[in-house]
Length: 239
Image 1 (tube, rainbow, N blue to C red):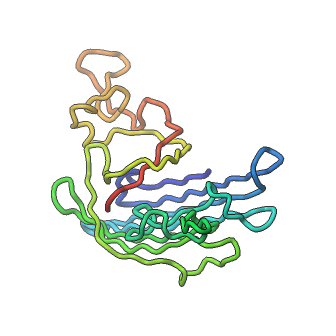
Image 2: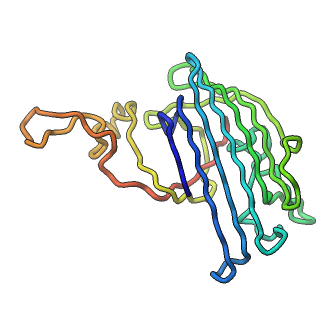
Image 3: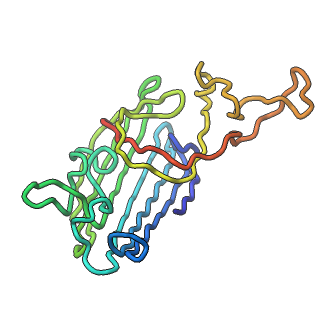
C-alpha cells in the first residue's frame, strides 16, 4: 500500500488532500484459491470556505481474475457499496452486482466506484452538520463502470466532536486494517482528565536535557510512542 497524506488533521480535516492505493496479488501456486489482482484507489480533498469545509472523496476498485471471469463464490474479495460508509440512504452493502441465487443476498461486486461530496458546518458546541451528496455502486466483471449506473443520495447528517476526535456512533465491521498509523493526542485531548499529560504525547512542555527544575522546551511534533499497524474498522450507525 502507498499513502500520501497532506491533511491538516487525520481525524477532522479542514484542509489538504489524501491519496492512497493498495494492491493484492493472489497466486494459486502460493496457496490462493485463484489467481487475481485486487486494486483499490482512494482520493480525498478538503478546502475551507469561511466557516464551512468542502470535502470530496472518490474510491475506485477493480478485482481482476487472472485466470478468467470472476466467480461470485469469491465473496471475501468483492467490493461493497451502500450504507453510511459509502452511499448513505441505502441499506448496508445493498448496492450489489452479485447476489446468492435463490436467497437474494447481496455479496458485492468485482468493480467499485463511489463518489462523496460534503459541506460541513458548525452547529453548536461539539456538534456540526453535514450536507452530503453520494453516488456509487458495484459492478460485474463483464460490466463497464458507468456514471449512469451509480445510485445517488442526498441528505443531512450530524457529527460529534469528542476530546480525541470527531466520532459517529458505530459498530465493528470485523475488518482489520493493517497499515502504519501513529496515534496522537489532540489539543482538546490534552484538556481531558484521562488523556491530559499522557506520557509520550509530546504536545505540551518537556524537561530540557539538563533536567533542571522548572525548565522546559517545546516538545516534538511527533509522539514518543511507536506506530500502530493494525486498526479495527467500525461502521457508523447514523450520519
